[in-house]
Amino acid sequence: MAIPDTEKSSQVPETINLKDDSPYNQRLRRKVDRRLLPILTLLFLLSFLDRTNIGNAKIDGLTTDLGVSPSGYNIALALFFVGYVLFEIPSNLILKRFDPQVWLPSLTLVWGIVSIAQGFVTNQAGLFGIRFLLGMTEAGLFPGVIYVFSVYYLRRERSLRVAVFFGGAALAGAFGGIFAYTISLMNGIGGRKGWQWIFILEGILTVAVSLVAYFVVPTWSYKAKFLTEEERCHLIEKLQADSDAGTDQSFQWSSVRSAFEDHLVWAYSFLFHGFSFVQYSFSFFLPTIIADLGFETWQAQLLTVPPNAVAAFSVWGTVWVSSRVNMRAPFIIVAGVVAIIGYIILITSATSEEQYLGVHLVAAGVYTGNSLLLSWPGENVSGQTKRAVAVAMQIMIGDIGAIAGSLVYRPSLSAHIYRKPNLIAIGYVLFAILMAAYLWVMMARENKRRDAILANAKEDDLLETEEERLRLGDRSIYYRYQL
Image (cartoon, rainbow, N blue to C red):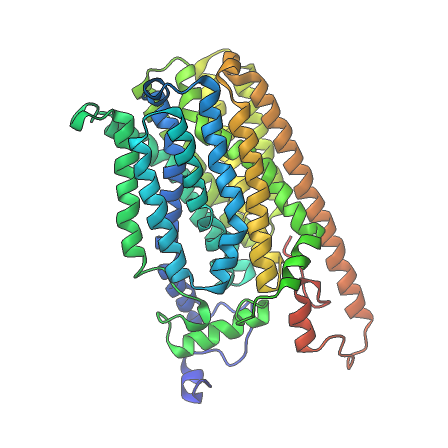
């Protein structure tokens, strides 16, 4: 629908300028933020809380009461990611075919029910099965939300929103410690242990929020009812000028193949693989690591709060600066270096105070690096189906690293604050730093090559039609990668 001239002259910019930050564009962006960020961040906070609260339950007696062997706990952690990895790409393809307004709340409802069921398991086999189901049901949320962001925000706008969203993971760790301590005081109520109530009550919270989410989670941008028709038209025009995000593209198997053939898509995936190892091994074992520093169980629950709070502020501050300068790679590399310094302090320090400082640095570096890298494919992969697959690939291959992290931190290696696993973690972070540098160099080189081609072309040369530009996506001569 065409926008009336009177409306254009008073509000809507007459031409699409991607750098335009007029009052109208600011109001439109804030309107989208208010609808997307609170509910999607809350869903991810609950997702992260429901997957990592097993770490709090462990030091509150889960393994002892269920008769879980030392290696059995690691297997239970790994099985979550097996289910997660297997169902990520199928879930994102379902999302592309259907509607996020229904699919994302439905996922939340189902995993909330599974999370409650964790409080009713009675043996090790039951724990294995329920953790696999939890991974399977949670698999679609994260890649789905990243994909939804890509059809509402310009590429330069996404990293800050992903950071706000991902900050929910750090907040989940902070709130998780407080919740776990408070809920564990219910030990014996209703004939159930404190660790059982952790799963049951936090799962009930997830189910309650999922029911509200059906009325709040938005649909696709091209049919968003919370925007006026004029706002929707303008948003879609901006998205089309920036990439393909504003178009309603049909599913194509050729785009799936294109994602698997792109070396940059694999590099994004390996980058997250390195950071995911440390992200989840750190999250799952943080309460145990702090308890091993010599603190009581209740103290360890509460002492998980400060490192996660520091991580949240580090994420938001760093990504704000990154978005201002429109760069990702150098900040990811610096975050990796900070994490490595934290691990070195953990390994080499002799006092619990110094080691606790190292925990804070690891948290800040790991969470910050992840928050930056997870928005990168959404900014740089064009073609809606290709982008959906690329985002899911990144999470899927990344979470294979999480499986490894879950298995490496074994109780038999807890001496000297998991010295060997922490050395392995340093190796994974170094690998991630190399991947970030590879992406930085390769994309900068390709941008320069395309600039040179256009600079040498004649003014009236049409190197690609609009149809060809959309078909080629990020391989178009006019497309520029965000570094």
